[in-house]
Length: 213
Image (cartoon, rainbow, N blue to C red; front, side, top):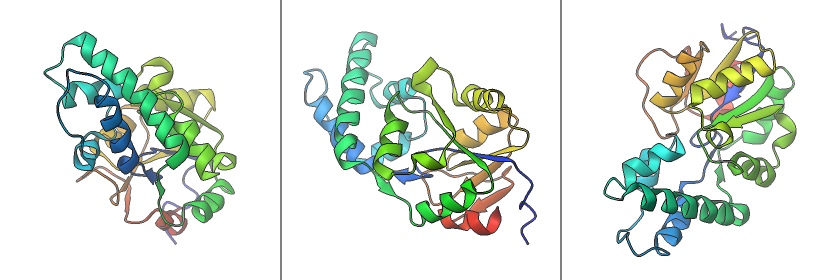
């Protein structure tokens, strides 16, 4: 038996790169947004989107568009966010294999939550399109209060009085945030990032959580 079975009372999940991959359609959305302004003349690629997935929404635009002034960057961020939600509402993202049956199993044993660095409305789109909303007790994101992920994880822990949560994510930023929040970390190595040390376990498929937890 896995040493982690029955060790936790709750699981908090990252979204992008952990539960689904929306980078293909986010790329389309951001390109459509960039085409609406006259101060950006470049091409958005899936690789560029993957490279910043997991960062706070404002930090993403600082990294992708360092040459824009603050007003331009703020305007473009708003257009991208609107375009992103419009496209994802219809197209969604690619759910990782065995998501439904794995969440069904986990929800029978643990309280489940999502904490993501996304804008407001993004988690709701995932829950609606995936049909997974019934498995989760709550969620928190960057767009709600503008807080970093560590603070949002703490909010979930405190608001729902979690005693022994674990965080599942796919980037070093996820690991750092979980650590700052005092929550153990499970690394999903099928996602977008690399984490070398510090995790309590590593999974190569989402379905592996069934055996692990």
